[in-house]
Amino acid sequence: MTGQLAFVESPVQLLNVLEWAHTQSTAPVAGTTDGALPGPRLPAPGVPTSAAPATGGPADATAPKPADALTVVVLSPTDPMSRGQLRRMAQLARDQGLTVHWQEARNGRGALVRTLRELARPLRSAERVIIGDPFSRYVQLLLTLFAPRHLTVVDDGTATMEFAAQLGRGERLVRWHRKGSLGPRELVLAPVTTLARRKLAPTRGRTVEIFTSLPVEAPPGVTVTENAYAWTRDTFGPPLLTGGADLVGTSLVETGVVDADHYARVVSELARAHGATRYFAHRRESAEKLHRIAVETGLQVVRPELPLELIARRGPIGRTVVSFPSTVVHTLPLALAGTGVKVAVIDIAPEWLRATASPRAQGFLSGITGTAAHEVDRLTTRATHPADRLEFG
Image: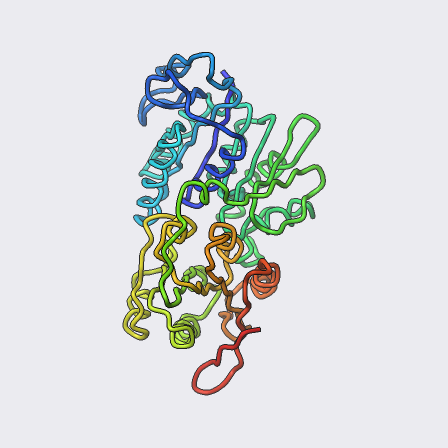
């Protein structure tokens, strides 16, 4: 049995798998027993792979060939916000007729071995494998088990830009916000990362596609396909617009890139300058930081139940959306095309960075703002006392 198998670990990855499937014109199959597309069948958690049925339900003559089918495997994270968003995204995927298998890949001792055992067979039988995070150690380990004929990488934040650049330069895969030196854990996993990088590169027997809304230069032999967020626009909205502005949060503090005090001060300045009333939190932002923002700025902190592209498209949303450097400065203009919403991005000043930040951080963040769509305004800061003054660039 052949088919298409997608591995996702975040809500945004699953959203972009749906966008990719939309471009392939994958439709629900009439006649299946559970409304699912046929594909590599996966057992229920804890059931040995050998006990799983080998095929899907019966399908009529209008069903796509098995090679065109898509099964999504959610490698569930541990943090509650990501799990909640993924549950809701999984239901949206099922509503589109896709098979979704929830895998508790990090649930205590033995989870890794159990996951590898249950996924080995469908991995080996899949014609195409779709992944959302080539930097994921979990995905890299899975990549050592198989050599798919076709591989697709969908967006999971701005890491796609770094992945394409590192693949093109032949470098080892390292997230942009990580320090340059290898720690003990990285040294142990280095052989896995090296092998996975080879599995992510195109060869005579393997095609590699990057499906992205970001401006990336195609590495040699790699196909880059534009993600225009057509499924999002076709499915939701247009949104009701509010009179004010909304701010979009970031996890740059949590990843050790930006100083917490600078971040809180700039959020306060942005709220005052743009008349913002809501702050859409990133799913990885800490409760302590969000509490500080709410108390010091008076902003309503919103924990979105879905990726921001869907929240914004469903509305209500502010006429202006202000964001720190992140994927949304590329995706929101696509998702909100034709709605009249203006997106603005704030430059990260060098003095905001922590001393422990990666040496690559400033250049990478500047690249995100510098390559933002022409519809996006750039905001810059001019150092004053006691706080930064924000200006349009």
